Length: 256
Image (cartoon, rainbow, N blue to C red; front, side, top):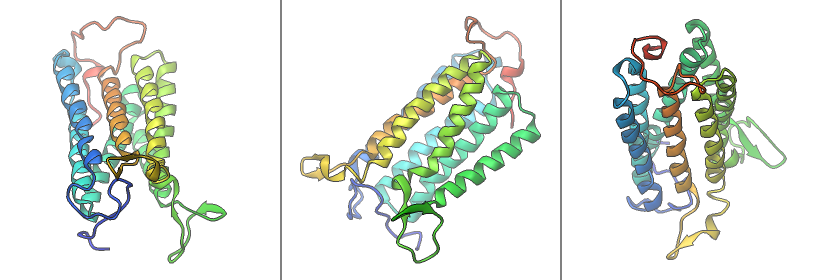
């Protein structure tokens, strides 16, 4: 498949290669841009000692996710598909490293190994295919298709959010509850992504089938915003008031 070939993965596009074939899927990427802008504003209001390069990198990735997804839902080519998925993958890996190292104080060596393992599991999940009678890794030429409309590749990220969020929450850290809320929203988000094609014929507006993928965008924007807020509160106890940080301690460091 050439990078310029069109990709028809979502209900709203159907088989239309036109630039504006997915108006809802395109416009709702504004949620990612808004989440990044608001998060940046909130970060800049915090004491300088509590900010780090990690925070700015994560915010930038959320903004790039919005732009990449917008490009994909406008042009729907293999090339723009990479612009859509690569920033998402980078955010997942970098945020996991941040959470392990900064929130759970996992040593850098173990953090690196765990992130590599997560990347391997995620890559394997993306290759899973469903077919009559089962799920697995069928060979070339089979009639198997993506599982859960291609959403199964996001399940490792959901599991990681639940595990890390639970561990952080158990330590009495303010970030834990935010991560768990993000996991809950992401669960609903993945559900809507999975149902896009299944409900395609049932959701029609002005004679145009719209599907549910646009809800995935909106809920994912909320998910990423909550994760950004959690990263800002690294080192804060859920029981303590949110007092300004006067000295550069572990909350102002960077895993980079």
